[in-house]
Length: 80
Image (tube, rainbow, N blue to C red):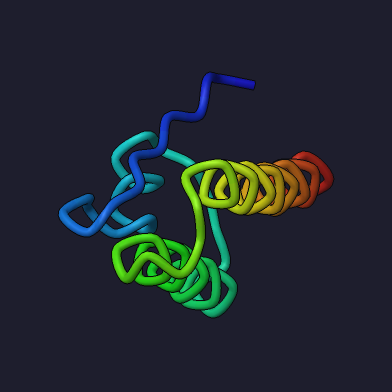
């Protein structure tokens, strides 16, 4: 699997755009939820409601979920 590179933050491109530019397959509905999660993490950080450590922890969990989603999509296409 190729390396996944994602940028998070208020000014970052949408996750779907980032995945598309890297030629990763994804479910559009799931990606809407992932984007909402990413936006929520940023919002909480900006408002000072979570610490930098909590932000990193939440972002890492989100990245793991996105990777799992992409890997499952790759396995689906392998069987077609």
